[in-house]
Image 1 (cartoon, one colour):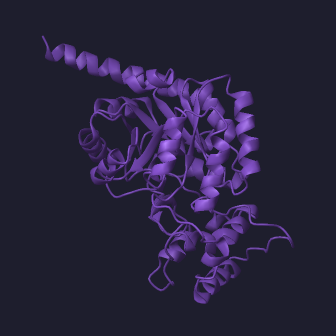
Image 2 (tube, rainbow, N blue to C red; image 1 turned 45 degrees about the vertical axis):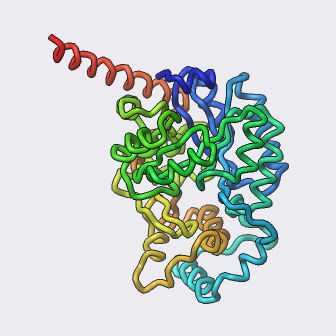
Length: 369
């Protein structure tokens, strides 16, 4: 599974593994792929430094990267308290009533929320990058599109490639104009924030739109056969995220959540604004249903929604309240039926890829006779 891009980065397989877990990122790189650590949950620079130190010690010298959530336009001077003050009281009441309905216990006194998306904030994201650029990262990816121009320039000065996620050809062209090196074409099937165009349609559209920039296909990919299809559509690699959630190296801190993922089918996800305020594919739960219901208050725009539900999500996860318990995950969850090591996943991907290529070669051979 080698392409021009994988050769440029010095990896055996053109498989980019996005994950919030350092152990998974390191394992992806050791297995011959390219591990990408998601930084959005790191609110303290020292925590990110700790985990990058860990990756450095366990990646066996293999390349890896970092994924941030950063708005393209530079916004300074806005504090978390400023944003918190914008949240309507009626929405706070709805959260408390929903938690009470399901008997969700309070956090212990003094216990901070363990789930708080503030990485989108200018000062937090830039603090993450101040740490990351002290490490030999080879790739900086941004989940909200092109990073600010000064960040792109800073990355390039340090020899770091910059990638940006796109849900349409129009978005991809904007990334190209902004000096991005790699476009991740993320289809509707993907977990987390995603657009409305399916991968089979989106990937070739983006490849054509930004040629000669390399494109990674994302969304609905969890087998070697699907990787072969993505490369056949013109992608130079694939961006996988959901498939790592049920690996042995992942640390979900919840056996109940792992069980729900293993039991879920491809139809058990929903694209909802309940988590962050932007459409994000996740497990469908009674929590997402409550926010999407016609008689509910409706979700708030990003970043208000994420801050509003932060403590609630922490409580749901800590106490494993099954009807409400969920996580961002793509439709590929229907293939995630057992706990395997990252290496075992790679072994399966490579075998499936080889079978798909052999099948196409046999068809092509018959067509040529």
